[in-house]
Length: 272
Image (tube, rainbow, N blue to C red; front, side):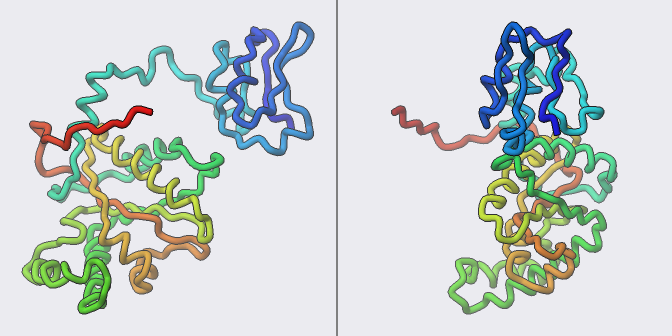
């Protein structure tokens, strides 16, 4: 299959596509030919889309569902540094939620953005489980507590915290999912040693994009630990065969607004 499609009327033969190709398989244009890939090298294309994204005249299209190509509107996505800085600095881990349900359509929009997260070799190994039913989120929290009880008296790093967490749970406080109405679980293929990092990158995209949609998030570390070890929780999540939980994130509409930015440790940089 042809790897790239080039419009000869738009191509300026600038050579950028061959320069940015991370696999080095695009032969640059000359006065007599357009950019191209030969049949031998076409098989190693990872379909990252660098060639298409960097083409100034948009003459080149990666031959991967070309009918779905969407042009980037002029100026779209440009954010002033100050605006971006404040947006990122005001991001908070949300542990107090309203009872309002986040519409599935909005969740899908958010996850659609996460499809563009970086992944090793453009492997895109991350798939999602969305626990949308608040009652099921409560059940997952309860199963996580069951897992915690198995750690009591063990040498697990969390064992010392278990009594306090159990006491809080038994007093009616959800110390696992914090009353969040929804839970997001990123799954990856078993045996893929680099996919764990890909999942964290994708979840970070969700985490950072969520406030723009009026959604608050918090990394669900207790659920993530339990889901990696506790079979009853794995069954409840219905993780597909051949896949495993990489990490989890609770989310919903924040109960409180953000009005300030807290302090952080001073920046430490070592220049080399």
